[in-house]
Length: 84
Image: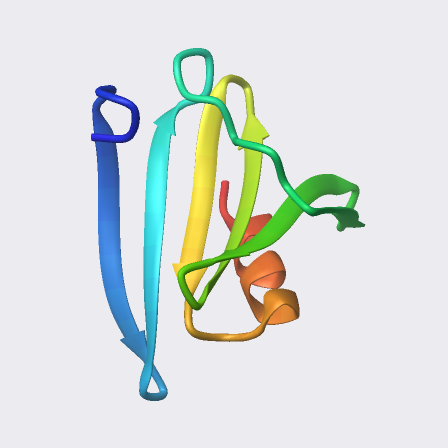
């Protein structure tokens, strides 16, 4: 759970890098206070760093998506923008 709300998480190992994808109801879970806002493929994506991992978030139709990884900020943003 994120903030005591049900959350799905999928964990991957991509070319030796850890990548976790979270899917949640964005009406009940805040995306937090992101450091950077960017637009990728016409989608707003928010990125930050937490505990040594890059975090990229977005939402579509009240569904929130977050990617936490040891990849760089740009790679995480690209991954989360490609989710739908």
